[in-house]
Length: 248
Image (cartoon, rainbow, N blue to C red):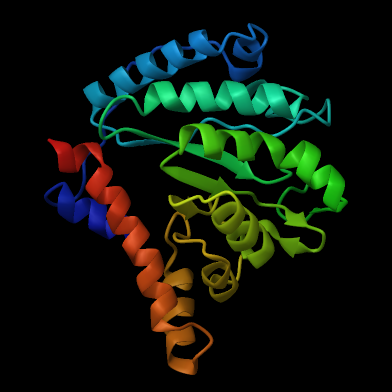
């Protein structure tokens, strides 16, 4: 569905474009500076390239916690410390979103701290550890930089997929922290679309036919309400209105 929409917007079959972008230092290295002003400058410079390329939403920064030395994506996470992670990410996002029409997507919410079996593993975490370590950086980034989007994680949290947890997405992220932006899934997640919509996830990525069919079936059998679909659609439309394309 998303591919078809993109093709129509591009006037037919779509357009493949290769861009030569700046190779910035990875987040793990940037975090070692402890310099939020520097991170804000980097974010601003990244945003300038996004404007030049006509890109609205960057799927970054990633800000999970360094817990497993074998995690293949530690280089794109900031730190083992949630305070440094949150402060650095918030500065980067503020810099990026200083350019009108450009936004960040903080990810992966939450506890995506290993790559092995990431689509099925259950990260079993106590309430205190979750709050003080794994959610703290996200909380700082949400409250101090208001990123336009947030991406959920592949893994389960205490037995349930992160993006299907009402307590995580609605109670904590949206109600406690006051997050108003769009929430999307990571690519090809195993979520039940009905449960994700109940939790206030707005967009299933990359937009499979099976997800669309599940939503239509849910609307028919009552497991999904029209209000939930309208709520998600409204956030998607709000993001489009905030986008670079809308500002041109």
